[in-house]
Image (cartoon, rainbow, N blue to C red; front, side, top):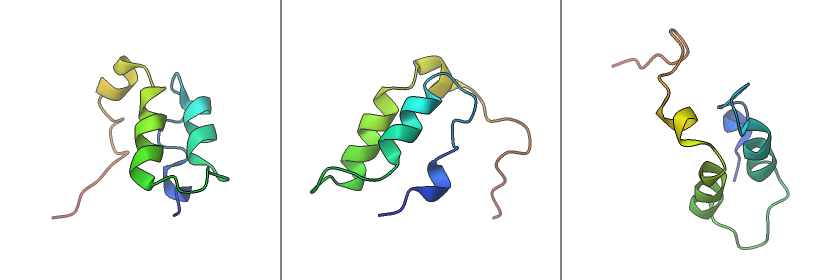
Length: 62
């Protein structure tokens, strides 16, 4: 499992250091990606999760 691209997903946001610690290896043996992400998302404040992405930070090509 690789979370390399998600490490800085919440860069400079409250809870981002804890997020990075959780999604960075080593992980407990037998931990699924789903469990890992659920645990990491629980440490982030709700206002961080509700915030709109910065302009130009995400671009989806259809």
